[in-house]
Image 1 (cartoon, rainbow, N blue to C red):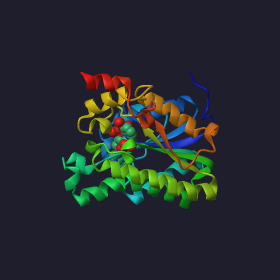
Image 2: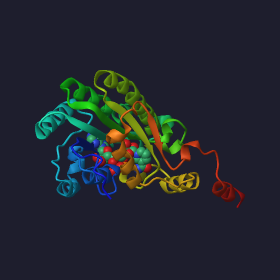
Image 3: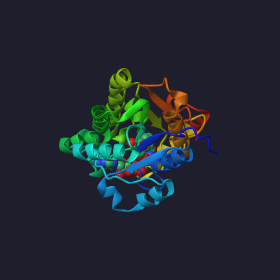
Image 4: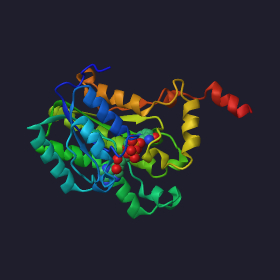
Length: 270
Ligand SMILES: NC(=O)c1ccc[n+]([C@@H]2O[C@H](COP(=O)([O-])OP(=O)(O)OC[C@H]3O[C@@H](n4cnc5c(N)ncnc54)[C@H](O)[C@@H]3O)[C@@H](O)[C@H]2O)c1
């Protein structure tokens, strides 16, 4: 059911790869809630052509952008302002890529060249996008920017590898830039720390099945789905949450504050 929470708002959604992507589902929800959208992803990810199906459904243009490339980001923001006829209101950063995980490198034996690229794509890209928007004065007053993260930024999940460090950096950028953008333009910047979710990026984590089942048993409400996450993002883009900024918001069915559950104890006693 739509509440038209985003009626009159315009925004950019990064990271819709296929219909399982959190960004994909969020784009559908934002559109249902009345928002006008632009979709973007890395040119290489677009070659699959899936994103055009989403673009048709939400009636949005697709503008390619590799977030590790400053020129691509400049081009995206310029084109977005042209398309929207001026400033816009929200951005979803739903991007993650670990080159060391991809190449099967253990955390204790990282390739630092890959590591720089991982941080550039997964973390500093948020800084680049925000800095470009600030320079071009692209976001409206009280605009809202969300980046997706994972609790491995605070606690050790050994197989999350260098992405744990990437997410810590991402959360820190959200806080630090959130301060400056808040003071300058009342733009708010937050991260949402989502439950493990079956997507292309999620399933790239070693032992994902064990991981997601464990989280399910450790969360009083169970794991939050991609759809639940999309709904939460919609509220964060709406004016109903306008005083929330610089936060890391756990969206994980209570996992982050649970020490142990009966379900896990039962399992251990078997
Ligand atoms: N799936 C999970 O378990 C989970 C849990 C918590 C947080 N997250 C985070 O949610 C976000 C979205 O991931 P997802 O699970 O929907 O998976 P996904 O694989 O569908 O999305 C990841 C996206 O990042 C994009 N990307 C990679 N390199 C890029 C680049 N250079 N430029 C632009 N885009 C690039 C990919 O093309 C893809 O669309 C990520 O930040 C991820 O870390 C996922």
